[in-house]
Image (cartoon, rainbow, N blue to C red; front, top):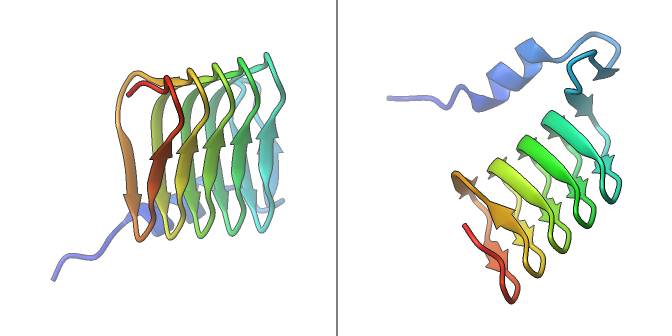
Amino acid sequence: MRLSTLPLAFLLCLPASHAALAADNDISKINGAVRIEAGQHADDISTINGAVEVGERAVVDKASAVNGSIKLGAQAQARTLSTVNGEIKLGPASRVSGEVSTTNGAIALERGADV
């Protein structure tokens, strides 16, 4: 029997304060949403029991959520998106250069979205 290590990996990576903005532009949260504002850049974004929202024309390297959704705004970009128990929505003309994956969720692409 193989167990998923994704939720455990999230817990091990998150600081005791439940939220952190590291010097390398990583953001992690427990029980809360993460929003990258329009036009902003961030590296690795993760949340447990919250959503990830990437604003219009914003750029992230990797976004992941457990028990939450991920939404890429119009013309936003990412390398990798993944969820467990959540959906992924790619806005108009958004782009993901690598993998998009979900366990127990849906993936929706709006007009012009590219994976």
